[in-house]
Length: 358
View 1 (tube, rainbow, N blue to C red):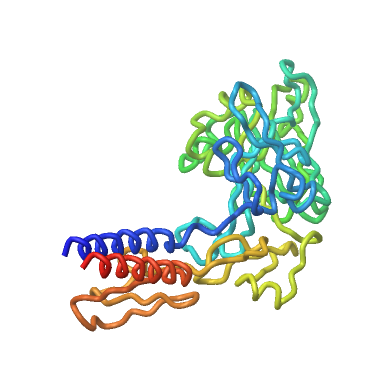
View 2: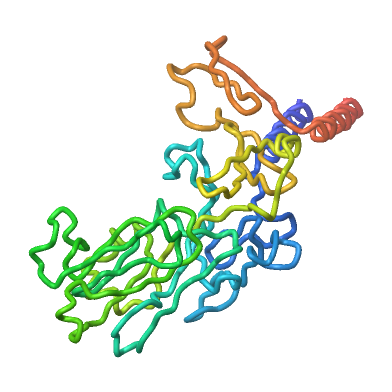
């Protein structure tokens, strides 16, 4: 009796271990064998930090110490610090992604364009990412200019597109709905789609005051950050050296999976409005479509409230089914074949030991 009890306890322990091992691990996002974090930033492929871990030099990440002692990731190809790398998920409506928005890399971009600012000297610097996989996000960024008597225009874009804003010295021009940056010492507008170049030209709104120019800045900034973190742009922005900016990234000209190759990875692709190609996991799958391991099935039944009215949830490849309850007790044993064989051999040995002690 004692041996039988031991056998049962041992079997249950082994089964519990097997079920824990059999639980689906999160799908890999970095190239196998490669480090997947730098500081507190996850680094998914096609990005990577060492040779063989990234798609090409555009996606190479330098993990080093920045200002201060913390370790931070940098994109040396565009000379910017990385804050976050995000994969698109057009099937997750709570992710905040536009349906056709590609991957996002959030970076710190310097405020390098200014005029008549004696503290920093004359500046007409810009950013040129032509030929890279990175584009300024139209959906997530704003073009902002701070200064009085100011017309700021983006340059380096399609000559048929005119983008800019103007600000006055008189607060009567403010729109109360957007009083923070709407015409008085600060103006803002949207960013064109598919742009890789950022530069600015300044002009006085009132030519009579041309000889009395004041300091002006123009920059791109992430909408969410600007709306939540900045209270008084005309005062705060001149003291900042860098601001968060969202860049879209694509794999155009670098990777082109065949239809069968994408199908094997449970992936699909779409093109952006400016022709950039982006791969994503199919509905019901998650993971990294750029890795040969591809995307893995999501077990929807592990989520709360997947099936309504207490129906039984049955996971299927790429989806799930809600069934009627068949019985008050339902037992499911899911384990790898190798574990089942091992459990069988353990049971045979324990049975032989029990027989020998009778």
